[in-house]
Image (cartoon, rainbow, N blue to C red; front, side):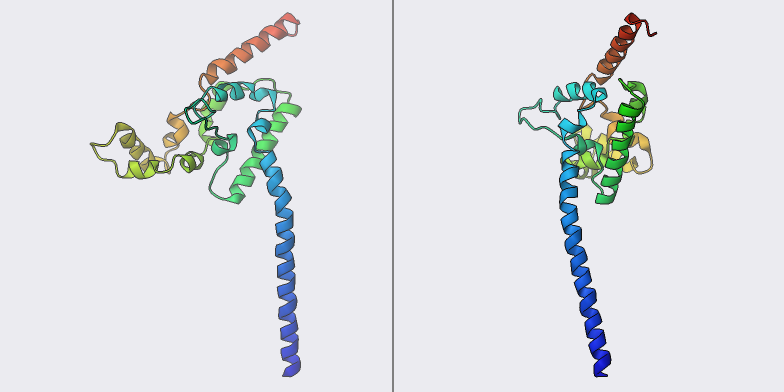
Length: 203
């Protein structure tokens, strides 16, 4: 019995040691991963592609981009990454990053199509990001009655339907709120580019 007990005790210690080592190694590996994720999530990095120039310029003029009395500036990832869990955040960050790099460097895109992106806006603007900053909004909407401000009554309807109807996402109504006049800016870029190539005889 003593031999069996000794084996079990030793086995338990080995398992504990391996588990502890695994946690330690995982933590050490996570630190640089977090730092890399941070670097690749800054507004400067997001705006480094030339196709993002209209977004950068319009964002700077918006309330979210610092045009407010507090001087608050949101990060691109505050709106364009979900705040649900780490796994989904990393997945969306990775896939969207690959998609942008592919378009920029493989397909050689010089401008983006506003109409196509506008119709897909709820796919890359996340309600969880909006509510992470605008805390208390859902509670006000839930408790709204006929005497409440109209915005709270409208939000009450939105919160009641957003799980089942994609037309009730934040970006469904509040489009271009962080990028005022984005449609004009992007279409102007397209026109300028066409004129440039026309002058060079490429059209």
